Structure formats: C-alpha cells, structure tokens
Length: 159
Image (cartoon, rainbow, N blue to C red; front, side, top):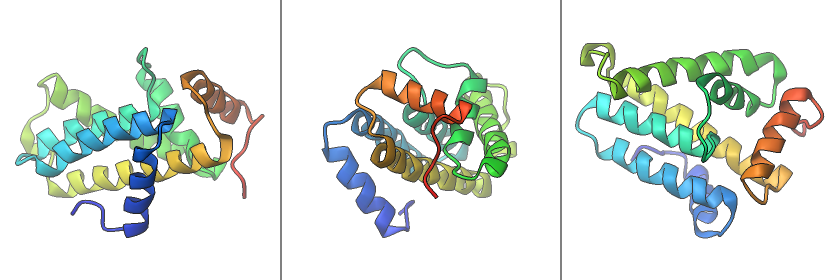
C-alpha cells in the first residue's frame, strides 16, 4: 500500500465521496495515484504522480509551471519553508515533464525518487483537505482566490 498513514487514507476517502470542488480534484488525483501504484516502471509512476499533483493544485484551464510551483509552496503553512516546497515541486514537475516528453532516461529515476514523489502527493492531498476545511472553496474560482490571497498575505493558514 502506497499510503501507510491510515488517517490520511480515511480523510481522502471521506473527501472523495462528497460532492465538492475538492472531491472532484481528489477523484482525479486518486485515479492517477492508483496508476502510479500499479505501474511496473518507475518512470510511468513518476508521470502518474505528477499528474496527480497537477489534478490537486492545478486549474481546468491549465497553469504555467511557475504558478503550480507557487501553489505547491503556498500549501506550506510556514512562510519560511514555502520556497523550499516550491523547489521540491519544480524537481517533481521537471521529472514528470521529462518523462512525458521522452527526454529523460529511466536510469535517472529510481524507486527512491518514486517514493519521494509518493510522499509529496500524500502531503499535497492532506494540505488540500485542510485548505478545504479552513477556507471552504465552493468552485474553481474560489480556489484561485484562496491561492491568490495566500500569496498576497491577505489570507493565512491558522496556527
């Protein structure tokens, strides 16, 4: 089982069955997460995990990598650690893009890297559940506004 934390699994299951903007994102992400779990090859799992993250923090209209990295970072409650989180995203997304576009050899991706991405996807899922609980987005426009307000400091994560 990729997710060893039973509380995370329970939170995700509760979120998926609801009919909210987050539940749609979680269902798409769960489908790609499942693809990663059953992938025989690490490069296939990396691609699937990258898409899972995109499903959670992205936008139906697509977003530039810089905006996705920013959103990933803004999920971090500690502002001092956000730049490091954004850097982690860029590493993940760079590998995902390289696999998607056929420019990465499979020797650069291994089980350790795959497991790191699994942890990141689980972290994003947990943080998105908390974002949903704290800020109550009703639609994709609300998600955009929440991330924008976190960016400008007019909205903050509770301590």
